[in-house]
Picture 1 (cartoon, one colour):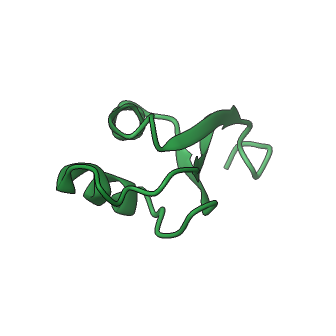
Picture 2 (cartoon, helix red, strand yellow):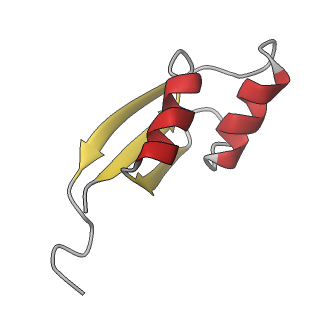
Length: 67
C-alpha cells in the first residue's frame, strides 16, 4: 500500500484551531517534522485541510513486500 510522506513547512499558529489540531493529529508538532502515514481517504482529507502548511509526496511501502 502506498504511503504519504508529510512535512510541516509553515507554522499553524495564527490559523483556525481545527487546522492546528489537524496538523497535530497527523503527528506534526514542530516545523520541518516529517511523518509517514498510509495513503487513504482519511489522511488525504487531513492533508487537504492543511495543504497550505505542509508538503507531501507519495512513497513506496517501507517494508517493500507483502506481509
